[in-house]
Amino acid sequence: MSERKTSRRKKIERPQVPFPNANQISPQEEKRVTYPTKTISIHWDALYAKRKLSDSQKEEIVEIYYELQKKPSSLIEKLKQLVEEFPDVPIYQDYLLQAYLLEDKDQEALELAERIGKKYPDSVFGKIAFVELALLRKDLDNLANLFPNGFHYKEVFPEKGIFHIVEILHYCFAIGKFMARTGEITEANQYMDEIKSIDPDSILIKKLQAEIDKSSGVKFYQKILRKFKRK
Figure (cartoon, rainbow, N blue to C red):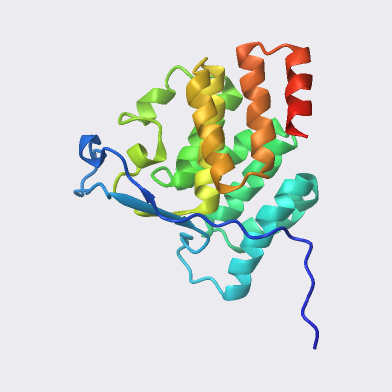
């Protein structure tokens, strides 16, 4: 039997990376004691879910990531069904949220972000939802209260040693947009660089660049010049 062909580009991977200045990061204020980790690992297998996922489900989660890059609208109905069938697998809800955002379905995104934030307030996907909710509502002033130790995922989750690739990509996208809209252009570019280091072909790069350009007042001819330089 011949192998099944796929048009998917090479699966992105991310090796372990060092945790800088770990001793300077204060543990989150929780009932349990947390210990900052000195290294983190970012890969596809670090998937949080209350149920055990089959190998085929894990592969589907990877496939959805790549399909989301091409035409988010074509995935919305499928993702709604997956969210209903697997309500305890938060990555499906996050994928649906991203599909709504990429297709500018703001009302649907707002309602879903509210539900995710309430259900998973202390998780990476929950934090993503809170940030997207603030962006959609244009209510950015109080967002810092949710991130007392800083905005970077290493500061928000100092005890978490393993992250799923999608967690980091979507978290950096959300915080990057927040930084751009609050005028922190250098920081926004740093989050975009993190996305590039994991997946240089991500659709999120173009979207975040547009946010940065809008906030920094980049002129039209500068955008065209940059486009030609990339070719």
